Image (cartoon, rainbow, N blue to C red; front, side):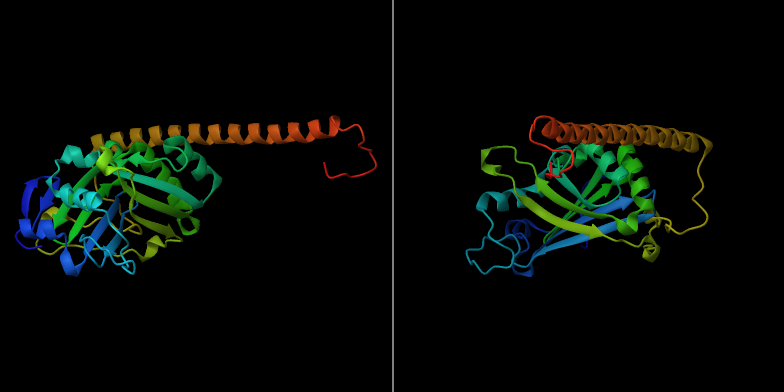
Length: 278
């Protein structure tokens, strides 16, 4: 958007008050989620478009679905929130549909199974608002735990399938019940197809190095020490998660064996020579 008025280093706004009230209007409204993963050298961007914009729809054939007046006001009012308020609004629910056992254990230990996480408390986020769009940039690598999980995921990225659902946290009765704002399934990604994007005449938007780049960006010795410390912490966290997952799995298998043997021991009619399916 042209002539964007920046109110904060982490919040950018454009458009007029009438655009704000209209919420995109007939041109639709788009929510953009930009997951920036610098350790892998990629950004994963998803676009979620509502053709009817944020106007109330009473037509049951509306492709965007029905929207309550309270939810519409919540979405439009986000542009008037402070950075701190926005950081406490956006929640992410992840579901690993397909992936290695180690990654499942790490995710469960880090955030729990299908548990909503308030992202602004865990990672750095930036926000951009226009008359017909809202963008949330998530700097995933600012979380040591997330960075460690991503390192594991990168080894199996072509076989990982994950669902991500974004929810706006309700702060009062009018904003309840909570509902999904947008969702996306990412699966079988090929990072080798990621393209380097650089904005011309804008040094502040230096390109993120390609994931296939042979020469890593230069860094000072102090930053290298910090990175090694982060890596060690991430590895320790993941090792603990793997150990916990292995222990839980062993406990479950032992419980299953106990149930099986108890079924046989408690059944006086079981004949050693006959398989009764116990």
